[in-house]
Image (cartoon, rainbow over all chains, first blue to last red):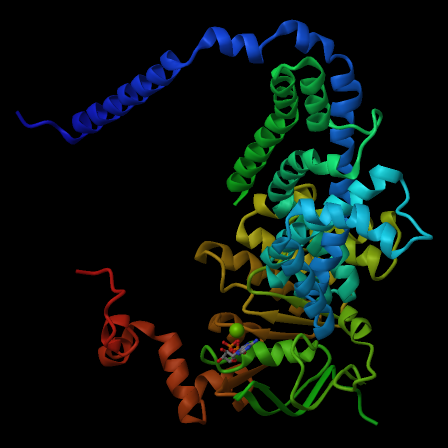
Length: 264
Length: 272
Ligand SMILES: Nc1ncnc2c1ncn2[C@@H]1O[C@H](COP(=O)(O)OP(=O)(O)O)[C@@H](O)[C@H]1O
Ligand SMILES: [Mg+2]
């Protein structure tokens, strides 16, 4: 018997699902669910983490993320404009910065800002305590990535937009501010939202700066609970709280990208 | 002293790297004149137009617009550009702004007109191009012909003394060309000084006070449209007009030379 192409495709697809389900069942069946839930899903342990898990830990995670994002965005914008400058040294400086900070682990940069800056400038300190150090420490790395994103966004605005603005008598600066940058930012909103998601997760590195009970963030908070309760349930709680922040953001990115695709 | 020319170009040269695109252009446009520039693709028409408002920096030569030497390094080019409207082949409307904002933003930011005044001038010029009802639309919601008319209104709202058009209808579907040409015809009738690069020979013949034929970076000949179209003096002009006015009669060997299959590559040719 000869099968039609559509029949064959459907059989192949169903076969794929069956294999996938079997593998899943095999893995799930071989796990010891009793011991697993005993370890990771203890309601009493989870309950003892609240409300601090939200009022302090999650709040600080979000605060660190937003601070680093705003700082990184500002520095990133300046770097992007320098990268596109007609002045050579600006371009070289921005390129060097971007290559350097994209090549270094975020943890290392955070360390250097946390411990290097106080050594280098003993009589001065970054304002805002840990908040300030995190803003700069995570923001410097984020700036390098965002600079490249923003540069690509500016370059994606057709050259004719700048020319039309200049033709109407606008200065280069005015044309950038009123015409090019607003359109560039529309283009880069999805990738920048992705950057917020990455930053949210990077705030788990903040513990290396030595946080206190008021400046603690989710990962460190979960780690501490893990030590005192000798039970890993806090890790699950922290994971879920991260997802509370990151999943809506991913959803947002997907929606924005879909809208952008429609507008093309 | 005689009256001042609106545009006065002399000895204009422009090179991109080693490619010499303009090779000595002398051209004057008097107030109220409509000068149409015609010529084959790549002959330097756009570059000539873009030199007039310094979107391209001339390599040598001088250009005066209303008596101001724009090629002088000390010239305030932003101020000169305010007086020169330019309409592009690709419209170049600001995509993030509504039609009204497109027409008001430069009035507000450059001429420092207040909101009410800018809106009034915008409405006036949108009426001139027949688009008052589209003031709140975004460019993407308009047809190409409507977008180009908004672009004209945007340029007019700066009260220019000179309008440059670079193939304003070349990106339009054929049925939308007429509405844009009608607006331009109206402008010409009102006495606007215009320098127009176009492939619309009927428009040039009817509206132009002078037709300039360019080829390979030089002005080959110029004169009243009836003369240039009716009895061209140069072989190159005759050849060009023959090709654009009677495209179906161009010999097959001439067309064949332009097809990709006849270039010897043939690899990217999708045909079997
Ligand atoms: N920015 C540029 N850089 C390099 N070459 C250019 C540039 N602009 C135009 N040219 C070249 O100059 C020549 C004339 O171009 P253009 O003035 O656009 O001709 P036209 O408008 O008559 O078709 C073409 O060969 C084109 O490739
Ligand atoms: Mg051209």
